[in-house]
Amino acid sequence: MRNKKKAIFNTIFLILIFSITVYMVFKGEDLGEIIHTVRQADPVYLLISVVCVVLFILGESVIIFYMMRTLGAKVKMGHCALYSFVGFFFSCITPSASGGQPMQIYFMKKDKLPIPVTTLVLMIVTITYKAVLVVIGIVIWIFGRGFLEGYLGQYMWVFYLGVGLNIFCVTFMMILVFAPGLAKWIMVKGLKLIEHFRFLKPKATRLEKLEASMDQYHETAAFWASHKLVILKVFLITMAQRILLFTVTYWVYRSLGFHGYSIITLTILQSVISVSVDMLPLPGGWESVSLFIW
Image (cartoon, rainbow, N blue to C red; front, side):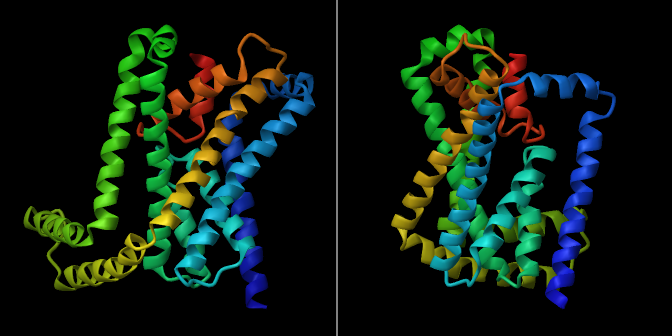
């Protein structure tokens, strides 16, 4: 009975959030024109684009399920799919996709999954996602610089900035995961500095909780350090995920009757834009929109 009530509450909560989002997105827009455009679009290409998005989301659920099971956490595949859909939705409506993982942790906590494990799993997901963007950005920069300059021109610096910020982010997060001793030192010193300048009122229990949390983190991170093959598999799945999602722009483009650009060109351009704006405080869903603006 309790599980049934929980499921009903979760469903109502998601429907409410989705309804508010739809209202905010389409507020002030000509819904008639939007509906007309959708009706004129080729349903086959639209269906392909939807399938690509769904496969992208389910790809993350496979990663979460695989890592949870590797870490000894008992979780159902269906629940992992829910975590992924929740994360995708909230990432699309919050700046820098910052709302996705907190909501995933919230739902995982409701399923009584250990916080240190869920936090580390989602951090690995984030690290591999950022690492994939870095690899894609570097490969495009090395082998397609002329191609990029032809399309971006004076905005090449935005691409370089995006790659640089992602490299910095990946490096910092890898320190947190694979050098937990250094991470603990940074976090403790940072907390003491914040309390010193009175941004937070000094409290002994806060430091104790932080140190205890970092100790748990160390135990789980040590496990990952000895399972490099797991990280490699997650990286490869993430790479396939990203490429699949980057093709969505092409399928929507074709559904609207356009033929001027190939799937390779639009996929590369979409990946460039994703790398460029990933660290900027824009809602996650704006990546694809920006391609048509450019």
